[in-house]
Length: 356
Image 1 (cartoon, one colour):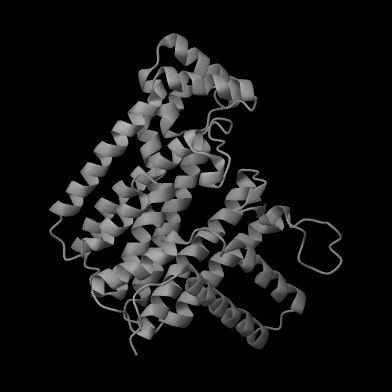
Image 2: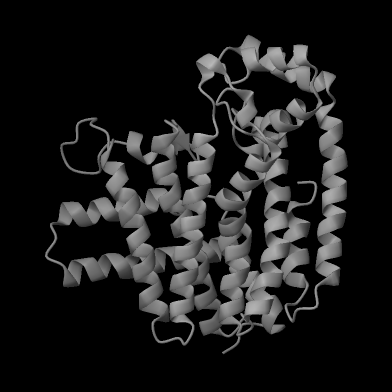
């Protein structure tokens, strides 16, 4: 049977419930684990994996539809949804660990997993805490179990495993770059905030797993993952990932919290973000002193001083010019590629993020 090509978020979420229930049932049948441990793993997954915007996962489905240029069969739709969920699983394992490292309080409107009450009888308010380190590893391992269960007989199974491992490594290195690029706030060394450092953080921490991975997975499923095609896709998608992250940095400072779904904290958290990098490229020595004193400080007065400096340097105007020129560059890249990848794989994705 052939099914229609669209996949709504609601349909996508139902697939997660199905995939997770298969894994939990397998644990019950084939492992002599106590019920408390299995319940813990189930609760962990329900909290860590679904709940985001799911754009990465849904991109696998839409990309496969573009590659095959027809409606997907029931099996193709289901398997592309499983691969989509594997990306969300990957994201889940990153975020469980990320929240501990960043000392975050909430995630998607709930307390972070490590701050939640232990999902066991008699927890009496005791939180998951540092056990979340092990939990993040469990989420990662279950993702590979899902891959094996649904793809082990496919000729591209090993390619999928290697792709997930490579992208995990790249993202972890991006996290390392991000965490080690923040100067000590007591002696703010702004020399660490260079455009080169920023671009590397974005490429490794965001672009590979958020943009390249969903399309590359669909390319393997669609049988067009040649070395040349993968290189061509990577070139375009990494550029798109940078464009997306720079928008994100801009919205962190200028976006309305009710629209972007979070209160921006890049200034307080001393992040090597695009705005501060641009400010450092333009500022006078006096303005640099102001940045050194106030960037990375928690006080609302310091945050306001930094924002005022951004206003004086017209960082907003610089962003608007960048947004347009970068968009045109990406369009040019897409139009000039001579690979056999349908352009819709790229243009549909770009349309979702342009001027969001």
